[in-house]
Length: 450
Image (cartoon, rainbow, N blue to C red; front, side, top):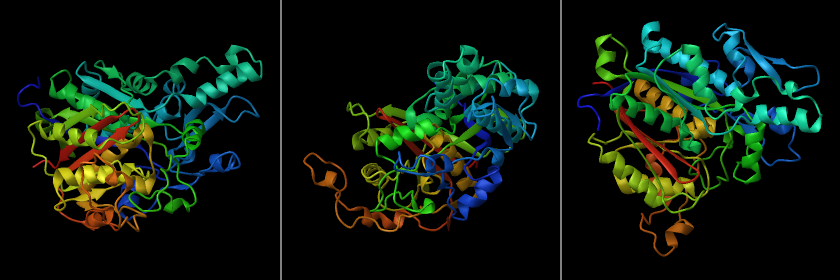
Protein backbone atom coordinates (compact mmCIF):
# COMPACT_ATOMS: atom_id res chain seq x y z
CA UNK A 1 0.00 0.00 0.00
CA UNK A 2 1.13 3.61 -0.57
CA UNK A 3 2.63 5.26 2.49
CA UNK A 4 0.12 7.70 3.94
CA UNK A 5 0.78 11.28 2.91
CA UNK A 6 3.46 10.61 0.30
CA UNK A 7 2.85 12.60 -2.86
CA UNK A 8 5.03 12.82 -5.94
CA UNK A 9 6.16 16.01 -7.64
CA UNK A 10 7.70 16.53 -11.06
CA UNK A 11 10.67 18.84 -10.55
CA UNK A 12 12.64 18.62 -13.80
CA UNK A 13 12.35 17.75 -17.48
CA UNK A 14 14.53 17.46 -20.57
CA UNK A 15 15.14 15.38 -23.63
CA UNK A 16 15.65 15.36 -27.39
CA UNK A 17 13.01 16.75 -29.72
CA UNK A 18 12.68 16.81 -33.52
CA UNK A 19 13.84 20.00 -35.25
CA UNK A 20 14.65 21.60 -31.88
CA UNK A 21 18.02 22.29 -30.28
CA UNK A 22 16.56 22.37 -26.77
CA UNK A 23 13.44 22.38 -24.60
CA UNK A 24 12.91 26.15 -24.92
CA UNK A 25 12.70 25.92 -28.71
CA UNK A 26 10.39 22.90 -28.44
CA UNK A 27 8.14 24.91 -26.10
CA UNK A 28 8.01 27.85 -28.49
CA UNK A 29 7.33 25.80 -31.60
CA UNK A 30 4.59 23.70 -30.02
CA UNK A 31 2.59 26.61 -28.71
CA UNK A 32 2.96 28.69 -31.86
CA UNK A 33 1.40 25.83 -33.77
CA UNK A 34 4.42 24.71 -35.79
CA UNK A 35 4.99 21.25 -37.22
CA UNK A 36 8.26 19.47 -36.38
CA UNK A 37 7.76 16.89 -39.15
CA UNK A 38 10.06 16.99 -42.17
CA UNK A 39 10.96 14.97 -45.23
CA UNK A 40 13.50 12.46 -43.91
CA UNK A 41 16.57 12.05 -46.13
CA UNK A 42 17.20 8.49 -44.89
CA UNK A 43 13.71 7.47 -45.98
CA UNK A 44 13.85 9.42 -49.25
CA UNK A 45 17.00 7.49 -50.17
CA UNK A 46 14.88 4.32 -50.20
CA UNK A 47 11.62 5.76 -51.50
CA UNK A 48 11.31 3.16 -54.27
CA UNK A 49 11.18 0.51 -51.55
CA UNK A 50 8.94 2.23 -48.99
CA UNK A 51 5.67 4.15 -48.94
CA UNK A 52 6.29 6.91 -46.38
CA UNK A 53 9.17 9.40 -46.37
CA UNK A 54 8.30 11.86 -43.58
CA UNK A 55 9.35 11.83 -39.93
CA UNK A 56 9.86 13.91 -36.84
CA UNK A 57 13.56 13.12 -36.90
CA UNK A 58 16.54 14.64 -35.08
CA UNK A 59 19.66 15.75 -36.87
CA UNK A 60 22.81 14.98 -34.87
CA UNK A 61 24.13 18.52 -35.33
CA UNK A 62 20.96 19.95 -33.80
CA UNK A 63 21.91 18.35 -30.49
CA UNK A 64 25.63 19.03 -30.71
CA UNK A 65 26.59 15.45 -31.54
CA UNK A 66 29.28 14.56 -34.08
CA UNK A 67 29.30 10.98 -35.42
CA UNK A 68 32.66 9.26 -35.75
CA UNK A 69 32.69 6.50 -38.38
CA UNK A 70 34.58 3.22 -38.12
CA UNK A 71 36.26 3.70 -41.48
CA UNK A 72 35.62 5.28 -44.84
CA UNK A 73 32.72 3.68 -46.66
CA UNK A 74 30.79 2.67 -43.54
CA UNK A 75 27.61 4.67 -43.01
CA UNK A 76 27.21 3.88 -39.33
CA UNK A 77 29.00 5.68 -36.48
CA UNK A 78 31.45 3.86 -34.27
CA UNK A 79 30.78 6.46 -31.57
CA UNK A 80 29.82 10.10 -31.09
CA UNK A 81 31.58 13.20 -29.84
CA UNK A 82 29.52 15.52 -27.65
CA UNK A 83 30.65 18.91 -28.96
CA UNK A 84 28.93 20.63 -26.02
CA UNK A 85 30.87 18.64 -23.42
CA UNK A 86 27.89 17.19 -21.55
CA UNK A 87 28.68 13.47 -21.74
CA UNK A 88 32.19 12.07 -21.03
CA UNK A 89 33.74 9.95 -23.80
CA UNK A 90 33.74 6.84 -21.60
CA UNK A 91 29.95 7.04 -21.32
CA UNK A 92 29.52 7.77 -25.01
CA UNK A 93 31.50 4.61 -25.84
CA UNK A 94 28.83 2.32 -24.36
CA UNK A 95 25.80 4.17 -25.71
CA UNK A 96 23.71 3.99 -28.84
CA UNK A 97 22.13 7.24 -30.02
CA UNK A 98 18.94 6.84 -27.98
CA UNK A 99 20.97 6.23 -24.83
CA UNK A 100 22.91 9.44 -25.49
CA UNK A 101 19.63 11.33 -25.74
CA UNK A 102 18.52 9.72 -22.47
CA UNK A 103 21.71 10.85 -20.75
CA UNK A 104 21.31 14.40 -22.05
CA UNK A 105 17.67 14.51 -20.92
CA UNK A 106 18.57 13.11 -17.51
CA UNK A 107 21.26 15.72 -16.93
CA UNK A 108 18.85 18.47 -17.99
CA UNK A 109 16.18 17.12 -15.64
CA UNK A 110 18.56 16.82 -12.68
CA UNK A 111 19.89 20.32 -13.31
CA UNK A 112 16.36 21.74 -13.40
CA UNK A 113 15.46 19.77 -10.27
CA UNK A 114 18.49 21.21 -8.45
CA UNK A 115 19.57 17.89 -6.95
CA UNK A 116 22.99 17.80 -5.34
CA UNK A 117 25.56 15.14 -6.18
CA UNK A 118 24.79 13.50 -2.84
CA UNK A 119 21.07 13.35 -3.66
CA UNK A 120 21.66 12.09 -7.20
CA UNK A 121 24.06 9.35 -6.09
CA UNK A 122 21.88 8.24 -3.18
CA UNK A 123 20.43 4.77 -2.64
CA UNK A 124 17.08 6.59 -2.59
CA UNK A 125 17.41 7.76 -6.20
CA UNK A 126 16.27 5.52 -9.04
CA UNK A 127 16.49 5.38 -12.82
CA UNK A 128 13.54 4.04 -14.82
CA UNK A 129 14.01 4.60 -18.56
CA UNK A 130 13.30 2.43 -21.60
CA UNK A 131 12.73 2.46 -25.34
CA UNK A 132 10.09 0.77 -27.43
CA UNK A 133 12.43 -1.15 -29.70
CA UNK A 134 15.67 -3.07 -29.88
CA UNK A 135 19.07 -1.64 -30.78
CA UNK A 136 18.30 -2.22 -34.45
CA UNK A 137 20.88 0.15 -35.90
CA UNK A 138 23.79 -1.33 -33.97
CA UNK A 139 22.72 -4.92 -34.57
CA UNK A 140 22.13 -4.55 -38.30
CA UNK A 141 25.59 -3.20 -39.01
CA UNK A 142 27.31 -5.65 -36.65
CA UNK A 143 25.62 -8.66 -38.24
CA UNK A 144 26.07 -7.29 -41.75
CA UNK A 145 29.83 -6.91 -41.22
CA UNK A 146 30.06 -10.46 -39.87
CA UNK A 147 27.68 -12.39 -42.14
CA UNK A 148 27.80 -10.43 -45.40
CA UNK A 149 31.32 -9.01 -45.41
CA UNK A 150 32.87 -11.97 -43.63
CA UNK A 151 34.72 -9.71 -41.23
CA UNK A 152 36.01 -10.85 -37.86
CA UNK A 153 33.74 -10.31 -34.88
CA UNK A 154 35.86 -7.47 -33.53
CA UNK A 155 34.75 -5.30 -36.46
CA UNK A 156 31.36 -5.13 -34.76
CA UNK A 157 33.09 -3.36 -31.90
CA UNK A 158 33.40 -4.37 -28.28
CA UNK A 159 30.22 -2.57 -27.31
CA UNK A 160 27.59 -4.30 -29.45
CA UNK A 161 26.10 -5.99 -26.38
CA UNK A 162 25.85 -2.97 -24.11
CA UNK A 163 24.57 -0.77 -26.96
CA UNK A 164 21.75 -3.17 -27.81
CA UNK A 165 20.68 -4.76 -24.52
CA UNK A 166 17.07 -4.19 -23.59
CA UNK A 167 17.76 -1.82 -20.73
CA UNK A 168 20.62 0.07 -22.33
CA UNK A 169 19.08 3.52 -21.74
CA UNK A 170 18.63 3.03 -18.00
CA UNK A 171 22.06 1.40 -17.69
CA UNK A 172 23.85 4.24 -19.45
CA UNK A 173 22.05 6.90 -17.42
CA UNK A 174 22.77 5.07 -14.18
CA UNK A 175 26.48 4.75 -15.02
CA UNK A 176 26.58 8.45 -15.88
CA UNK A 177 24.86 9.85 -12.78
CA UNK A 178 26.05 7.07 -10.43
CA UNK A 179 22.75 6.61 -8.60
CA UNK A 180 22.62 3.71 -6.13
CA UNK A 181 18.90 3.02 -6.15
CA UNK A 182 16.72 1.22 -8.67
CA UNK A 183 17.90 0.89 -12.28
CA UNK A 184 15.19 -0.64 -14.46
CA UNK A 185 13.52 -0.55 -17.85
CA UNK A 186 9.90 -1.41 -18.57
CA UNK A 187 9.20 -1.85 -22.26
CA UNK A 188 5.53 -1.68 -23.23
CA UNK A 189 5.45 -0.61 -26.88
CA UNK A 190 4.00 2.88 -27.36
CA UNK A 191 2.96 3.13 -23.70
CA UNK A 192 6.63 2.81 -22.63
CA UNK A 193 7.35 6.48 -21.97
CA UNK A 194 4.36 7.09 -19.71
CA UNK A 195 4.60 3.62 -18.20
CA UNK A 196 8.16 4.10 -16.96
CA UNK A 197 7.21 7.40 -15.35
CA UNK A 198 4.17 5.74 -13.78
CA UNK A 199 6.32 2.95 -12.35
CA UNK A 200 8.80 5.48 -10.93
CA UNK A 201 5.86 7.36 -9.42
CA UNK A 202 4.78 4.19 -7.65
CA UNK A 203 8.30 3.54 -6.34
CA UNK A 204 8.20 6.94 -4.64
CA UNK A 205 4.56 6.72 -3.60
CA UNK A 206 5.19 3.36 -1.93
CA UNK A 207 8.30 4.65 -0.16
CA UNK A 208 10.84 2.54 -2.05
CA UNK A 209 12.63 5.57 -3.50
CA UNK A 210 12.62 9.30 -2.76
CA UNK A 211 13.45 10.53 -6.25
CA UNK A 212 13.92 9.17 -9.78
CA UNK A 213 14.71 10.13 -13.34
CA UNK A 214 12.24 8.41 -15.64
CA UNK A 215 10.94 8.43 -19.18
CA UNK A 216 11.10 6.95 -22.65
CA UNK A 217 13.33 7.03 -25.71
CA UNK A 218 13.20 6.08 -29.37
CA UNK A 219 16.54 6.50 -31.13
CA UNK A 220 16.72 7.22 -34.85
CA UNK A 221 16.31 3.96 -36.76
CA UNK A 222 15.45 3.43 -40.41
CA UNK A 223 15.06 -0.24 -39.45
CA UNK A 224 12.16 0.63 -37.12
CA UNK A 225 10.68 2.89 -39.79
CA UNK A 226 10.77 0.08 -42.36
CA UNK A 227 8.95 -2.26 -39.98
CA UNK A 228 5.98 0.06 -39.61
CA UNK A 229 6.00 0.95 -43.28
CA UNK A 230 5.72 -2.77 -44.07
CA UNK A 231 2.55 -2.86 -41.94
CA UNK A 232 1.15 -0.03 -44.10
CA UNK A 233 0.27 2.02 -41.04
CA UNK A 234 2.37 5.11 -41.84
CA UNK A 235 0.98 8.31 -43.30
CA UNK A 236 1.53 8.95 -47.00
CA UNK A 237 0.38 11.33 -49.69
CA UNK A 238 0.60 14.62 -47.78
CA UNK A 239 3.22 17.32 -47.37
CA UNK A 240 5.37 16.81 -44.24
CA UNK A 241 3.52 19.38 -42.11
CA UNK A 242 0.16 17.96 -43.18
CA UNK A 243 1.04 14.29 -42.72
CA UNK A 244 -0.09 13.76 -39.13
CA UNK A 245 -3.87 14.22 -39.12
CA UNK A 246 -5.53 13.05 -35.88
CA UNK A 247 -9.33 12.78 -36.14
CA UNK A 248 -9.44 14.11 -39.73
CA UNK A 249 -11.46 12.14 -42.25
CA UNK A 250 -8.44 11.80 -44.56
CA UNK A 251 -6.06 10.38 -41.94
CA UNK A 252 -4.33 7.26 -43.23
CA UNK A 253 -1.66 6.46 -40.67
CA UNK A 254 0.84 7.86 -38.21
CA UNK A 255 4.16 9.60 -38.76
CA UNK A 256 7.06 7.54 -37.39
CA UNK A 257 9.23 9.87 -35.30
CA UNK A 258 12.10 9.76 -32.83
CA UNK A 259 13.07 11.51 -29.60
CA UNK A 260 13.42 11.31 -25.85
CA UNK A 261 11.55 12.66 -22.85
CA UNK A 262 12.97 12.45 -19.32
CA UNK A 263 11.49 13.87 -16.11
CA UNK A 264 12.81 14.14 -12.55
CA UNK A 265 10.37 12.95 -9.87
CA UNK A 266 10.68 13.60 -6.14
CA UNK A 267 8.68 12.99 -3.00
CA UNK A 268 6.57 16.13 -2.65
CA UNK A 269 7.42 17.18 0.92
CA UNK A 270 11.14 16.75 0.28
CA UNK A 271 10.90 18.89 -2.82
CA UNK A 272 8.95 21.58 -0.98
CA UNK A 273 11.34 21.54 1.99
CA UNK A 274 14.35 22.33 -0.18
CA UNK A 275 12.52 25.02 -2.16
CA UNK A 276 12.34 23.17 -5.47
CA UNK A 277 10.27 24.52 -8.33
CA UNK A 278 7.41 22.06 -8.70
CA UNK A 279 6.34 21.72 -12.31
CA UNK A 280 3.36 19.54 -11.43
CA UNK A 281 2.04 17.05 -8.91
CA UNK A 282 1.14 13.55 -10.08
CA UNK A 283 -2.42 13.02 -8.89
CA UNK A 284 -2.81 9.42 -10.01
CA UNK A 285 -1.49 6.77 -12.36
CA UNK A 286 -3.17 3.63 -13.63
CA UNK A 287 -2.41 1.03 -16.28
CA UNK A 288 -4.14 -2.07 -17.57
CA UNK A 289 -4.52 -4.47 -20.50
CA UNK A 290 -7.39 -4.77 -22.93
CA UNK A 291 -7.77 -8.48 -22.28
CA UNK A 292 -9.38 -9.19 -25.64
CA UNK A 293 -6.47 -11.07 -27.18
CA UNK A 294 -6.09 -8.60 -30.06
CA UNK A 295 -2.54 -7.40 -30.69
CA UNK A 296 -3.41 -4.26 -32.66
CA UNK A 297 -7.09 -3.24 -32.64
CA UNK A 298 -7.96 -0.55 -30.06
CA UNK A 299 -10.36 -1.58 -27.31
CA UNK A 300 -13.18 0.70 -26.19
CA UNK A 301 -13.77 -1.52 -23.15
CA UNK A 302 -10.08 -1.50 -22.21
CA UNK A 303 -9.92 2.27 -22.43
CA UNK A 304 -13.10 2.71 -20.38
CA UNK A 305 -11.66 0.43 -17.68
CA UNK A 306 -8.47 2.50 -17.79
CA UNK A 307 -10.47 5.60 -16.91
CA UNK A 308 -12.34 3.75 -14.18
CA UNK A 309 -9.08 2.62 -12.63
CA UNK A 310 -7.64 6.14 -12.77
CA UNK A 311 -10.71 7.54 -11.06
CA UNK A 312 -10.78 4.84 -8.40
CA UNK A 313 -7.41 5.85 -7.00
CA UNK A 314 -8.78 8.47 -4.62
CA UNK A 315 -7.69 11.65 -6.44
CA UNK A 316 -10.21 14.01 -7.97
CA UNK A 317 -10.07 13.53 -11.72
CA UNK A 318 -11.61 16.53 -13.47
CA UNK A 319 -9.22 17.48 -16.27
CA UNK A 320 -9.19 20.76 -18.12
CA UNK A 321 -7.27 19.02 -20.91
CA UNK A 322 -7.06 15.39 -21.97
CA UNK A 323 -3.84 14.65 -23.82
CA UNK A 324 -4.92 11.79 -26.07
CA UNK A 325 -2.79 9.14 -27.79
CA UNK A 326 -4.19 10.39 -31.12
CA UNK A 327 -2.00 8.60 -33.64
CA UNK A 328 -4.05 9.51 -36.75
CA UNK A 329 -4.91 5.89 -37.48
CA UNK A 330 -8.36 5.28 -39.02
CA UNK A 331 -10.00 3.39 -36.13
CA UNK A 332 -7.91 4.31 -33.08
CA UNK A 333 -8.62 8.02 -33.01
CA UNK A 334 -12.40 7.81 -32.89
CA UNK A 335 -12.58 4.93 -30.42
CA UNK A 336 -10.35 6.97 -28.12
CA UNK A 337 -12.44 10.10 -28.67
CA UNK A 338 -15.62 8.24 -27.73
CA UNK A 339 -14.05 6.56 -24.69
CA UNK A 340 -13.14 10.03 -23.40
CA UNK A 341 -16.53 11.66 -23.95
CA UNK A 342 -18.39 8.64 -22.59
CA UNK A 343 -16.31 9.05 -19.42
CA UNK A 344 -16.14 12.83 -18.98
CA UNK A 345 -19.15 14.09 -20.87
CA UNK A 346 -19.23 16.36 -23.89
CA UNK A 347 -18.13 19.70 -22.39
CA UNK A 348 -15.80 21.32 -19.86
CA UNK A 349 -12.42 20.25 -21.27
CA UNK A 350 -10.36 20.15 -24.46
CA UNK A 351 -8.48 17.38 -26.22
CA UNK A 352 -4.82 17.75 -27.15
CA UNK A 353 -3.17 15.53 -29.79
CA UNK A 354 0.54 16.50 -29.85
CA UNK A 355 1.37 13.85 -32.44
CA UNK A 356 -0.24 16.21 -34.97
CA UNK A 357 2.85 18.40 -34.52
CA UNK A 358 5.71 15.96 -34.05
CA UNK A 359 4.43 12.52 -35.02
CA UNK A 360 4.53 9.28 -33.06
CA UNK A 361 7.76 8.79 -31.10
CA UNK A 362 6.90 5.20 -30.16
CA UNK A 363 8.75 4.42 -26.90
CA UNK A 364 9.26 8.14 -26.28
CA UNK A 365 5.69 9.16 -27.12
CA UNK A 366 4.25 9.05 -23.61
CA UNK A 367 7.13 10.89 -21.94
CA UNK A 368 7.53 13.62 -24.58
CA UNK A 369 3.77 14.11 -24.54
CA UNK A 370 3.83 14.32 -20.72
CA UNK A 371 6.43 17.07 -21.09
CA UNK A 372 4.04 18.76 -23.52
CA UNK A 373 1.35 18.51 -20.83
CA UNK A 374 3.74 20.07 -18.28
CA UNK A 375 4.25 22.94 -20.71
CA UNK A 376 0.46 23.30 -20.99
CA UNK A 377 0.31 23.80 -17.22
CA UNK A 378 3.16 26.32 -17.39
CA UNK A 379 1.82 28.28 -20.34
CA UNK A 380 -1.88 27.87 -19.52
CA UNK A 381 -2.42 27.06 -23.17
CA UNK A 382 -3.61 24.13 -25.28
CA UNK A 383 -1.65 23.65 -28.53
CA UNK A 384 -3.57 23.08 -31.75
CA UNK A 385 -4.50 19.74 -33.23
CA UNK A 386 -2.99 20.38 -36.64
CA UNK A 387 -4.71 19.07 -39.77
CA UNK A 388 -7.93 18.08 -38.00
CA UNK A 389 -9.69 19.96 -40.77
CA UNK A 390 -12.75 17.81 -41.40
CA UNK A 391 -14.36 15.44 -38.92
CA UNK A 392 -16.71 12.69 -39.99
CA UNK A 393 -20.36 13.77 -40.20
CA UNK A 394 -21.47 10.14 -40.24
CA UNK A 395 -21.07 7.20 -37.89
CA UNK A 396 -17.96 5.06 -38.09
CA UNK A 397 -18.38 1.47 -39.26
CA UNK A 398 -17.70 0.10 -35.77
CA UNK A 399 -20.56 2.19 -34.36
CA UNK A 400 -23.00 0.37 -36.61
CA UNK A 401 -22.00 -3.13 -35.55
CA UNK A 402 -23.95 -5.28 -33.13
CA UNK A 403 -22.63 -5.09 -29.60
CA UNK A 404 -21.27 -1.54 -29.80
CA UNK A 405 -21.97 0.12 -26.44
CA UNK A 406 -20.43 3.56 -26.87
CA UNK A 407 -21.73 6.86 -28.17
CA UNK A 408 -23.57 6.72 -31.47
CA UNK A 409 -22.69 10.31 -32.40
CA UNK A 410 -20.27 11.00 -35.27
CA UNK A 411 -16.94 12.69 -34.59
CA UNK A 412 -18.16 16.04 -35.93
CA UNK A 413 -20.42 16.33 -32.87
CA UNK A 414 -17.26 16.76 -30.78
CA UNK A 415 -15.59 19.40 -32.95
CA UNK A 416 -15.71 21.89 -30.04
CA UNK A 417 -13.38 19.69 -27.98
CA UNK A 418 -10.55 19.69 -30.55
CA UNK A 419 -8.88 23.11 -30.97
CA UNK A 420 -7.39 23.94 -34.37
CA UNK A 421 -5.44 26.89 -33.01
CA UNK A 422 -3.58 27.48 -29.75
CA UNK A 423 -6.07 28.51 -27.08
CA UNK A 424 -5.44 30.17 -23.72
CA UNK A 425 -7.50 28.96 -20.77
CA UNK A 426 -7.22 28.07 -17.11
CA UNK A 427 -5.55 24.68 -16.85
CA UNK A 428 -5.27 23.06 -13.44
CA UNK A 429 -5.23 19.39 -14.41
CA UNK A 430 -4.23 17.38 -17.47
CA UNK A 431 -4.86 13.67 -18.00
CA UNK A 432 -2.39 11.91 -20.31
CA UNK A 433 -3.30 8.73 -22.20
CA UNK A 434 -1.09 6.31 -24.11
CA UNK A 435 -1.68 2.86 -25.59
CA UNK A 436 0.53 0.19 -27.18
CA UNK A 437 0.53 -3.01 -29.21
CA UNK A 438 -0.61 -5.99 -27.19
CA UNK A 439 -3.42 -4.02 -25.57
CA UNK A 440 -1.34 -2.16 -22.97
CA UNK A 441 -2.82 1.11 -21.67
CA UNK A 442 -1.51 3.87 -19.38
CA UNK A 443 -3.13 6.97 -17.87
CA UNK A 444 -1.69 9.70 -15.66
CA UNK A 445 -3.28 12.79 -14.13
CA UNK A 446 -1.06 15.76 -13.28
CA UNK A 447 -1.97 19.07 -11.66
CA UNK A 448 -0.55 22.46 -10.85
CA UNK A 449 0.88 22.75 -7.35
CA UNK A 450 -1.62 24.81 -5.38
